[in-house]
Figure 1 (cartoon, helix red, strand yellow):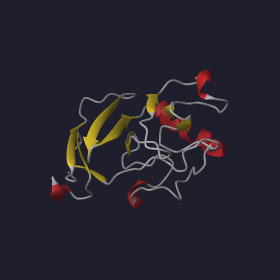
Figure 2 (cartoon, rainbow, N blue to C red):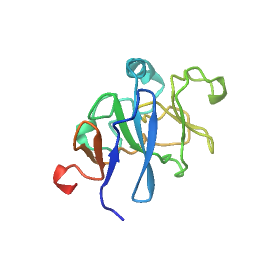
Figure 3 (cartoon, rainbow, N blue to C red):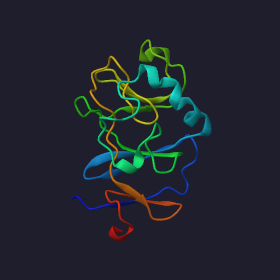
Amino acid sequence: AGAPVKADIGKLEPGQMVVVEWRGKPVYVLHRTDAQLEDLPKLDGILKDPSSAGADQPGYVAGEGRSIRPELFVAVGLCTHLGCAPKFRPEVGSADLGGDEWLGGFFCPCHGSKFDLAGRVYKNVPAPTNLFVPPHVYLSENVLLIGSESKEDA
């Protein structure tokens, strides 16, 4: 149940996301576009923990993008409030998501928590922390191993 899982990400286009199951949980693998990456620093002032100082994540994913490869974001798709599955909402400017600027991200309709495209939680929502980034490693350009930091576990 706790074994690492391989994910073929070779066909994942910019702007697309796939969901991989690991330990019975959904793991979101998002291929961010250049524009989405450029937008990440614009949200720092309205996020609870923009530098991810209190986030549950491996040390090698530090920084605003919270990733090994800037364009690829990997996170467990469970809201840190009550464990609901936030919906991927990549569109910009969604008026129905509340008053803060929305440049795409993950929205939990159950209680209204919002996360940006790096899984960083907005201020003034129920979720207390950023989305969890699991241990992971790239076995090749197109294969991701979720649940381990070592290629030898493949």
